[in-house]
Length: 161
Image (cartoon, rainbow, N blue to C red; front, side, top):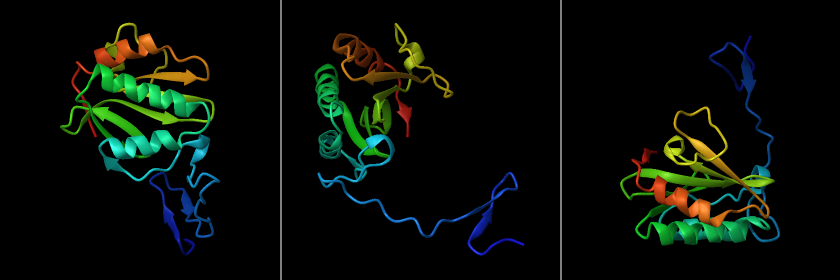
């Protein structure tokens, strides 16, 4: 017999919706933080949501986020920007994207959607075909290499999202 509020999963297991979970509350800076300190920012197109995300990045990640944004815009001046899924995206303005980043507790994860085509390839692999990641840890941002990857990625076809 299935419990009220439960639903069957495709593998036959059942899960009960947790109706007692309290909504996340803003921290002292007024920012709602998800796991790893990732700021919860309303989705939106353009520079405004991306700047709001960067401003809400915790600790050392904020300065790196601002530097990454400035580098991307210097290398690809007409790059389109958006925040979706609490993640800044950079692309071509046609709904395709070449780069995204996301805050975790100990690093910033940069996603290159066609990263397997970059030379040299970013170090971190993905289960998603073609995707490679760059994990930026405190004190380890290599601006010159990042700019080169941005230049390369911006010349490849974007990923539709």
